[in-house]
Image 1 (cartoon, one colour):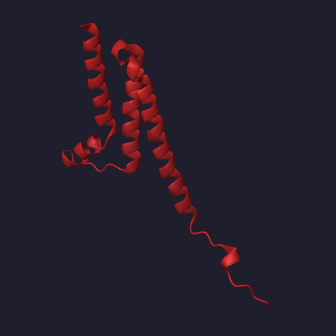
Image 2 (tube, helix red, strand yellow):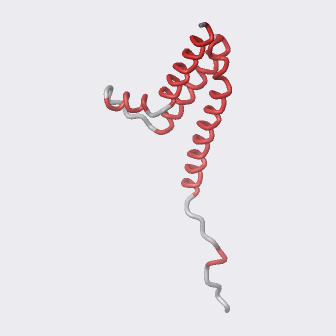
Length: 107
C-alpha cells in the first residue's frame, strides 16, 4: 500500500512541476492579474519551479525518484534560455556582411 501511495504522490508532484514550469503561470498572471510577463520572466518562473522541485526531492522521500526527471527538465529549460540569449546577442551585433560577396574594384 505504501508503494502505490508513494507512486501516486510522485506522479501528482511531477504533474504539478510540469504545470508550474509550463506557460500556465504566464497565462494566469496575464489574464487574471493583467500583468505583462516577458520571456525572460517566464524562464525565471520555470527554472524556479524546477529548482524548487529539486530541493524538495532532497528533503521529501517520495520525490527522490523524480530527481533525474527534474535535472533533465532544468537542463532543457537552461538550454532554451541560452538559445534566447544568444539570439539577443546576434541581434545586438547587427547584420553581418560577407566581404567575399561584395564586388571587387579591379582598378
